[in-house]
Amino acid sequence: MGLIVSLLVLSFLIFFHELGHFLAARLFGVRVERFSIGFGKVVASKRVGETEYALSAIPLGGYVKMKGQDDSDPTKISYDPDSYSVKPPWQRILILLAGPFFNFMLAFFLYYAIALMGANALEPTIGVVQPGSPAAEAGIRKGDRIVAIDDEPVRVWEDLSEKIRASHGAIDLIVERNGTLVPMTVVPRTLEAKNIFGETVQRRMVGIGPAGDVTKVAYGPLQGFGYAWKKTVESSKLILLSVEKLIEGVVPAKEMGGVIAIVQVTAEASQHGLVALFALTALISVNLGVLNLLPIPALDGGHIIFTLYEMIFRRPLNEEIVYRLTLGGWALLLSLMAFTIYNDIARITNG
Image: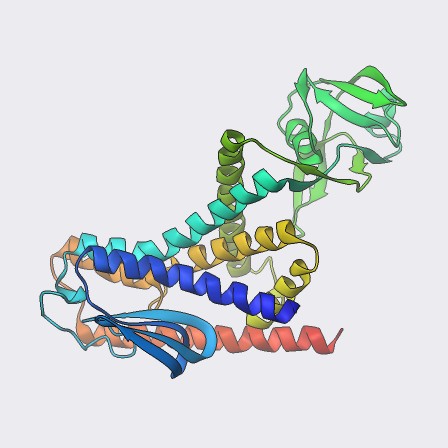
């Protein structure tokens, strides 16, 4: 069942991305010849109007084939009025941006649904107090629950962490202990810690860790918009930072995962309820949006770079150069796909 759910999720994400391109293309009068979920040989199709809607054999992506635009052969250009290639550059850029935009929009809606259903979060209950730490010196104990910092309420552990990191000087806490509220003052210290990429960073800390208790935090309809926006932006920054750390070599290439990892993790998330599945789907959707904007030929970002060149220099890039760059882009993408699948298989075989 988990495998079926993960394949449905992946197909839906692809569909939603391509739907963005499709709707933008139709808005600007571009004829869409094929809307396909998957690559390779078409296994099922139905023509509606001018567009063939297809399901293809390799469910690792999808595409919208517009008249006058062909990634397999960029030199195939049509000059008919309903062709992509004759549209003004700004319209072509909007068509290209529409796919990633739909990914971000889908993530926003999923996070908004999570906010209304109740987001999973760690309770601000102390599970660990480091000996000799500012928290220990202030008298904080294991089992205490932080309810406020500097007169601002604390709902979840993330609130606590953010307020400590952003603090300057001493902070005033209200601690709930055995049903009694106890005021305390703690002076955080700037200490070395490891971030999620394993790098050593300087961070203000008080020397506590969570107990691991999970709670659901529900938001109202208006608060939910703020939560959804915050999570979408945070997810986007995380993906961009991950790409940066990968390029810098901070994150080893063996940590890269591919479609098998996506299917596996999504299947696991589906076993933990709708909130967990929505959260992972939103993160994957943001991932697709960000990665498609990278300036790699054959991706939306690469096409945007080509079109920006045309806007700036008032002429399109040489067809031969576009063709060779696109072939190089496809070679890079296929190599990355093969490499990540190899990583996935190696992880599975190594347990």
